[in-house]
Length: 507
Image 1 (cartoon, helix red, strand yellow):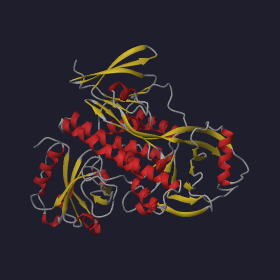
Image 2 (image 1 turned 60 degrees about the vertical axis):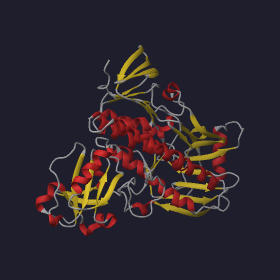
Image 3 (image 1 turned 90 degrees about the vertical axis):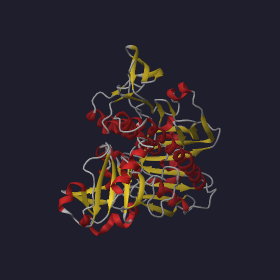
Image 4 (image 1 turned 120 degrees about the horizontal axis):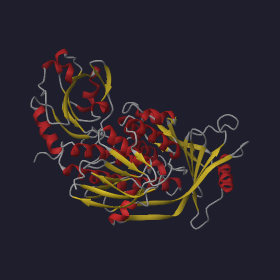
């Protein structure tokens, strides 16, 4: 049976599953999301969305509704619990030259999921199917057959690929026999959402995302749109605290307030565990199914969104016939180091800072800033953002001007590779009218050339050229740089050849 023309099946309607589906829809790939539950999650879970995730949501045309449901903030603070004094803050306005979204947002997961699901329903009605629990699946050369338990009994579904976004207890991962490597901490975290007024009646002037470090007991304070969230470590072996105990513990940090109401609470285990492999034929693991990373510094959900940024465009290129199957190998090759050496290592460092086992309190600010915009991908993997842009970096979202007004670099590559020729438009550099599918080539110059306007962008003051020099920059659909080389009159041909190698259609 030929199922390669079927839709992609996403297993799990959590944030990563929904964002992955939105990415596939944005690239024109048919998708169905299967969720075992009758409703979206109501658990008290992840609550902070970082800048790079905002960029991904914007690329998938889902940012506006998320912002409307969120609380925006431009400061991430570190407070010494013993003295109540600030030991420094990350001011996200420092990113204003890099992104259109120099801030982060707080929104609890149980409020984020309905927003994402609503956007997905608007874009692709009927995509999410509730009460469809995956039982098993079998792969064929040309697709995957799923067996799902539904209110009407067991049903079969034919898919081209399966994307497992079904969480830390992933059924897909278990069926594949994939091991999870790493460790689980004895220490657990307790989370409680409280309705209290720390702005007017009981002003505290804390940043809306604040980390209270202490050797004995640290705390994370998160201002949500409708409440304040408190996160604490629990002593290993102790029973889960009651809501009243959690409320009293919060008061221990913030002092007496006139009124406190417990909205919800959760106790969760802290992991640093990563799947040994993320792909088996046409089946891929994403989010918590691939990596269980402690949510310190918002590294849980946001790391999963990086997976949802990397894989959809690859699938789109392969399914359109624009790329070879080998393009799909880049997903695990790039994202697994991000989880192991990036998010996982930084989470360990964050715990050391919060426990005051590390003296590098100042260093956390640089580390946090790096997490806001992601990491360099590929063979030269790095958490460092200093120096000139390199292959693997996320390209700065700089502004240029098209024929009718401003446009940003990330907008130019939403559903295409784009080659930016940073050269003098007065010399009328040659660019081919047509090229391989999935690639467009444009000139970016401070000289506005009227007869090149269909393929040229005005760069007042050479802003882009100053960052990159006289180069041609090949940018992927996920806004990461694929290649940079010095510009020559023959760059149009060399960048075309490079693109074909990137998508594995040339040797």
